[in-house]
Image (cartoon, rainbow, N blue to C red; front, side, top):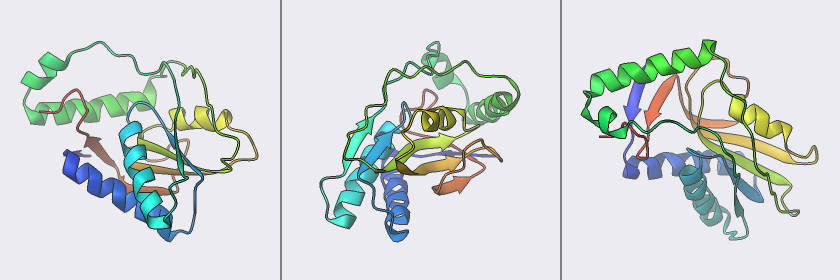
Length: 180
């Protein structure tokens, strides 16, 4: 499995490409829903690009508050390791996600403005699909949603996106704790 390091410039390009895929599909969201923690920056870039493409500044950006993904800080140690070892650790941790049950995700809120009927849900990646699966359970049945992610890292996740750039690729994004 490939591990690809993405800098800020490439992140901008990838998010704009993803926004263009949404635009080409003729799906016009009222709202872009950002999934913490990795989806916040891509959602903002995608929302801004969609506003330009549609010439519509009324597309709202909504951030879901949650208390998920609290890890022990090991930044200093990770920054000392060689990149080949960091790539190997990323692949191994992804394989472990497949077989070890993850802790329950507890969402604080999903405050979607009443006017939002077409929602684009944005995250950086889908691994197992558990996060998005739980979010979808919390959405109102009257909402028309589409999912956009930069990458789908594992085969057969619980949730399949409508739009993505990569398959079977792990992205090391600028905010990752193992970025050098």
